[in-house]
Amino acid sequence: MKLAGRAMRQLFILCTGCWFAGGFFPVWAATPSFTVKPDFIRIGAFHEATKVTFQAEIPHGFDAVVEIQGEDVEEDVLRRVRHWDMWMNGEDTLVKGAPNLYMAANTDPGLLSGSGTKISWGYRAMELRISFSGRMNPRERKLFFEEFCLLKERRHLYHIQKKAIEPNHSSPELTLVQGFFKLPSNMIPGSYDVTLSVVRDGQMISRKAVPIRAVMVGIPSLIDSLAEKHSLLYGCTSVFIALLAGLFVGLIFERLGIGKRRESH
Image (cartoon, rainbow, N blue to C red):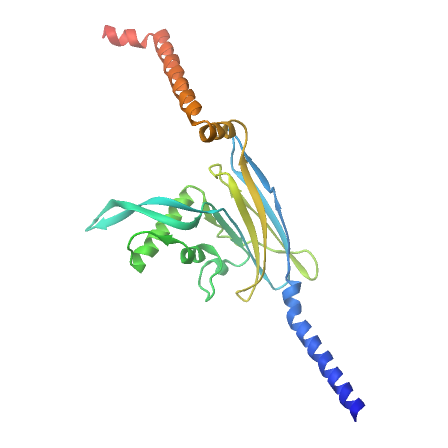
């Protein structure tokens, strides 16, 4: 009887362990492979838009959300207010917690719409974490946030891809997800995170981030370093260059005889 009871206990423990491992296996199986290229961006005098590609393998039946965002910054934004039927410029509003750059792509457009109970991605998630100075009711806050995002989109700093990423079946168990972001030429130097979220039934199963860095090189780097570390020399150099430019333009006008023509008339 004792041996039978011990065997039953061991069998129970074994079955419980198998059930526990089986329940958690999808979570561990969802751990993705994720690569981003390039991971280092040089911003020079003739810097143009940079194409950053990403590639990930996720299990079948899962969705993916890929985001790239910069550091959170504080910036003053001029707020427009409406008096009767006229829009007028109001006071400056301090925006805190908004990234200097944000872009997102996904395999299911509904994940970025903010319609779910748990909002983890897209503009809706950003709206919940940033703050604005001044008094605003909920309607004014929502309207101001939408205008703020439109302003960033016009500057090509914010973008959410409307077309879903088309996944490819790379193996019987895995799905290949690949795409790219086009980073604008007016991006600022600093650190950026490219993040892959693996999602199932609207719930995030795993998350992986790859950092990339953007730095100034060449003439822009020299000017920035001169302005920051040698402000007096930078100011004198700027004045000297302005004087030379004015003298050069004056000589051109004199050669063309523009000044003499005006005096004769």
